[in-house]
Length: 367
Image 1 (tube, rainbow, N blue to C red):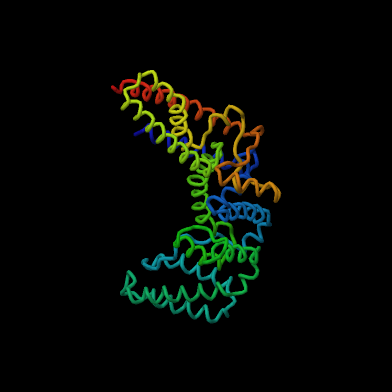
Image 2 (image 1 turned 90 degrees about the horizontal axis):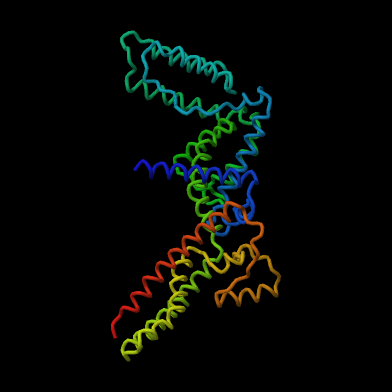
C-alpha cells in the first residue's frame, strides 16, 4: 500500500513537472506547447481550460504590478460570511465592519447610521445574552441588503481591470458559452457572487485550482500517452482488423494440417505468420509499431496534417486503407524518446515469450 501511494505521488509530481515545462516552452515535439494545444482542441475538446489558465497567469502578473493604492481598491474576497450568532462583546468587531462598509458605499451616511443604530439597540438588550433566532434573521437580512447595495455602487467602476474581468467571466464562466470551462456549480456560483465586489485574482483561486487539477491529472497523462505512440488510432483499428483476418486464416490452415495428419514440421511454416499476428496483437493496442521505432518514424495525426489539396486527396485514400503520412522523428523530446524505447523493449520481450509459448503449444497438438 505504501509503495503504491509513493508511486502515485511520484507519478503526479512527474505530470506536474511536465505541465510546467510545457507552459514554459521547455519541451520539444511531440510534447511542445503547440502540440498540447492541438491535442486539447481536437482530441479532448477542452482547449478553454488551457486558455483560461494562461489568461489567469497573465492577469495575476498585471494585477500584482499595480501600485498598492490601486490594488487596495480590489481586496481579496471574504471566504467566510459574517456570523451574527455571537454574544454582545463581539459586536465591536462587527461595528468596525459597518464603518468600513460605510466608507466604501455610495449611500448617504444618515441611512447607514440609522441602520447601525437599529442593530445596536437590538443587540444591547440587557435580558438577552445570545441573540434570538428572530432577531438574527432580521440582522442577516439587513447585512445582505447592505452588501447588495455596496456591490452596485460606484466602487465597482473604480476597480482595476473591471472590464477585462467582466469579459473573462462572460467568456469562461457563462453557461452555454463556447469557451465555458468545466468547473463545479458551487465554485462557479461562488465566483460569480464574489466577482461583483472585487477584481482581485484571488476570486479565481478555487476555479483555477480545479482546472489545474484536471489539466495535470487527466489531460497531461493522456497527452503523454498519445505522444509516446508512433501510429494513429485509426491505424491501430485497421491493423487489428487485418490481424484478426490473418489469424482466422492461420487457424483454418492449422486445422486442415491436423485433420489430414500432416507432419508436425509442416506446422512450422505458419510460425512467421503467427509471429506477426502475436506481435500485432501485443504492440498495436499500445500504439507502437516496432518497424517505425527502429526506422525513427511516426505517423502524422489528423490535426497535424497541413498538406495541400493534392496531398489531402492522397492522404484520404491512405486513411481508407489504413495508412497515413509518416514523418522523420528527428526532433523528438528526449523524455518521449526514452519512454518509447522502454515500451518497445518491453513489448519485444512479451512478443518473444508469447511466440515461444504459442509455437510450443502448436507442436504439441497431436495428429
